Image 1 (cartoon, rainbow, N blue to C red):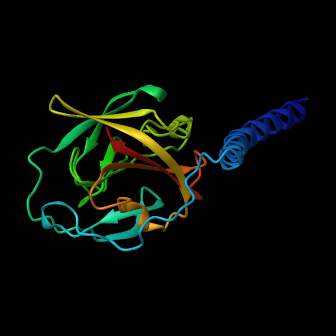
Image 2: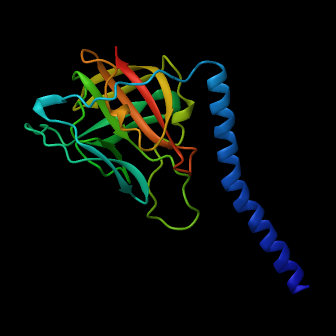
Length: 219
């Protein structure tokens, strides 16, 4: 009897673990295929060159392991430091409100990270922000916080709101893109005159196979 109960318990646990892994993956693939079929994903390539960024800083980016998965890391040499260390990000469509974004930081384990050397809110260029989308573990209280787990649910026209000490910058989402984890061209703005924002996270949630890029433009 004990062996039977143990076998059923292990079987149930195996099914549970399988569903935790398979369902998010399958759900995302369905989302990806439907978005491609509806023409909702950007397909045109971004510029391949890395332009000079704000305050004379040149964006030097590499792909390194951050919290055990490949992510963009910048060692950009910024001439003039930001006068603020963080700002807030909200995306009403997916219920994100006043999430802290650390300025010029490669750390986004328990907050969002603003890639060093990328534009600051309201500036010309591309405000590049990274966040996790991994599914939380059942055990342990030191998990990274998956602020961007619902990022695939945003659509063109939705708003991304940045709050810098009470001054708000509202960006309108103009497209989504799925890219390889090492595709650093996405840090570049589509042009040199506009004021853009890019949000990056790994997809499918819980995996690091691809990156979702959400591109917005200042309204």
